Amino acid sequence: MRVKLPRYSKYKDSGVKWMGEVPEHWEFKALKYLATLNDDELSENTASDYEISYVDIGSVSLESGIEKTETMCFADAPSRARRKVREGDVLVSTVRTYLKAICSISHPPDNLVVSTGFSVVRPRKCLSPRFAHYALQSQTFVDNVIARSTGVSYPAINPTELQRIHLPLPSLPEQELIADHLEGETYKLDALVNEQRRLIDLLKEKRQTAISDAVTKGLNPDTAMKPSGIAWIGDIPSHWDVERTRWLLKERDERSETGDEEMLTVSHLTGVTPRSEKNVTMFEAETNEGYKLCHAGDLVINTLWAWMGAMGVAPIFGMVSPAYNVYVPGKRILPSYVDSLVRMPLFAQEVIRYSKGVWTSRLRLYPEGLYQAFWPVPPLGEQKEIAKYIASESSRIDSLMLEANKSIELLQEHRSTLISNAVTGQIDVRKYRPQEASAVCQ
Image 1 (tube, rainbow, N blue to C red):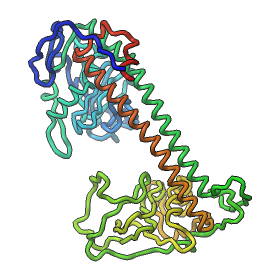
Image 2 (tube, rainbow, N blue to C red; image 1 turned 90 degrees about the vertical axis):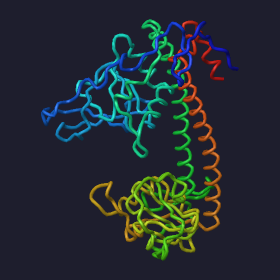
Image 3 (tube, rainbow, N blue to C red; image 1 turned 135 degrees about the vertical axis):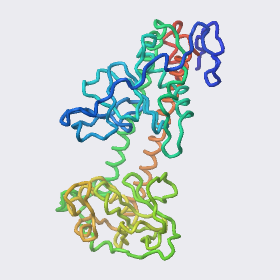
Image 4 (cartoon, one colour; image 1 turned 180 degrees about the vertical axis):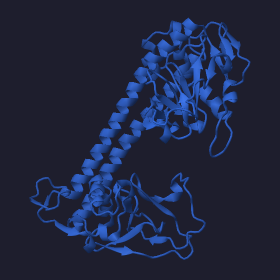
């Protein structure tokens, strides 16, 4: 049931198209009259061994604020690590504004420094930092920042243009009331979002456990077991075999003559998929002639990222990077079973042992390394049943995860609407009753 929320008794035209009406007793001012921008910066003469805690654009989100910092000496810091912050400041990303990297600064260490990709908004006396926190993350403000940004691949807004954006301005006491109201309501909504995220994590864990158990132990819990002799596999059904992959796979090295076949990509998240289904922004070669061909059912391994689990079975005929390795499953192993096996995190950890390189991030899995690994080999009939079970269980769990993600989207949409309505005066929080919040969410 949706209730009608209390509104102010009188409104006036703000004079700005995107804002519409605001409460009659509110003011409406450009940001430059309400806050200063980028007041403090590290000097170029800062001691080279001065340790800073650095925040980049990618470390801030609208939902979570500052998610991580990097500790480094000034001499090692990037040239964009310059802007100093203090309690009550609000960070607004001015590059890649569509990412909505906006957050408030609360209890910062003395050495916290942020990227020059942020504008550091410092409220004047007429603007409550708590109200500014919500006003600057409201959808109306964010939409204005995006609309005023220039550039296609790397849109940005300059500080002068940012300062021209207008904000509705209630009195200070009313700003604090709005902030109080939003803190309480967003806390409840964020708690619900976190519950859904925890559910998703549990579902992912359940799916992975189901896959691992099926691939290494089979589907019959009452079957007799025996030690496999391989640590990552553990005990297996007594009628299963264990084989080195060299006896189960053979490498395919066929090359495209035209480069016109469907381009496939390999990810640790989605396995092998057509590149056309992904939003790929990385560099693409001028020609794909000489790329490796793979047939439906072939195992494809991203040589550089195998340690992360970037491998899987191709669902269709296509081509892949010549840096990848392609393998044909033999008669004793079904492609659908192979796909489930190689995408297990346990197997990705296992192949690290057979990869070449000094650093984990530089490891490469070549055929001679893969061929040393052992696989459990059930009878073909069981492999088919295992693959069928995994497909069914994955589909069921994916449906539950989809519902959880939809719930998160709705909650975040409600949160965004709530903030925008409150900071633009579309609801009168002075008359708002707490019990109405739950009614709105239903």
